Structures are given as C-alpha cells and as structure tokens.
Image (cartoon, rainbow over all chains, first blue to last red):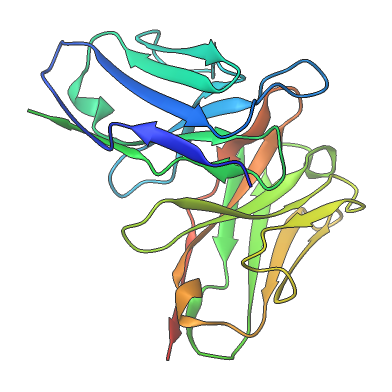
Length: 112
Length: 119
C-alpha cells in the first residue's frame, strides 16, 4: 500500500499568518493516464470531511482562494495564505492513484 | 442540492452484523462511483470500499475484505454496506462518499453514521 506521510501533525498558527502542510507518498502518484490523484480534505470539529483540492492543485467549488495546492511525484503541499478562524480543524492528504486509496495521518491546525 | 444520508448504524455485539445504507439525492446516482470510508473515534480516515457506477467493479481494503460487502441499487438511489463478523476495532463513524466524474475521489460526503461494536 502507498503510505502517505504528513508533516507537521500539529500546526499552531496566528490568525492572518500563512500555514503550510506537507504530504509525501511512498510511491509516485503519477497515474498511467498522466494525472496525479492527490487530494486534500478539511475536517472541521464535529463535521464530515470536505474536499478542498483535487488532482494536486485544483480548488473545489466554494473553496476560498487562500487555499492552494502544489507538488508533483511524491511531494505535495497545502498552503493557506492567511489563516482565518474558520480554518481550524484537521487536514488530510489522500492518494487516489493506487489501490487501496490511502490517507495521511492528518494535521491539526489550531489558532495560537 | 446534492445530499448523501447514511443510516443503519448502532450498537452491536462482537461477531454480529449490521447493514448500512446511504440514500442519495440531488444528482443522478447511477452516473457516479461510490465509496465507504470510516473514522474510528479520535483517529484518521480509512477508505474501506469502492463500487463503480454500474456495480461491476468493486474494491475493498484488506481490513474488511471477506467480512464487508458493498452494493448499490441504482433504482433506489442507494448504496449499502453489509458488515459481518464485526470486531471492536470496527467501531467508527462510517461515511459514504461520491467520486467526482472528472475530479476524482470523494467530492461529496455524507454526515456519517456511528457503529459501535461491543466486546
């Protein structure tokens, strides 16, 4: 199975400041179709997960543009340009290139 | 508005069975591949199973292979997960999630249903 490793696992941030979460995979996530199926999810306290980013860098509908995704191959990053209070929660990366689909451990974002 | 509503969770004894349902609305269910994902209390997300739009292709995680069975009824707009031989470690919130047609995995999620397996 492809192991997804996130860092840091805990991220205290100051409101209005940037934040960055890294995700690395144990194998390349480039699919034979040429796409890279790396997604990012946000889970606010007490809520279901919500997808933010698909195929590395594409924002889902309704996702604020302060969220951005980048990376290639085995190394990926989720950035929040200016953290807001509503961004508190756990963020997960997930790969859909290989079966079984696997998630990272999650990164808990909290306000300092 | 797209909605996925899970039901069927509850308290069951170790070795017992449960059948979860996920009723969808707001989109053409038969056009989309679907998944079950779970989250143990205080833990991360674990993908469990996938079924293609027609039901012809199915995948399972090793942790549930041989014990859980995914199925769907496109006429009823419903997804199912039959869970047998339940263990304490199956205790979790179970989510159904849709795969986007072009965007890939898990673009829409349900609210989840809690399954508690007592030993």
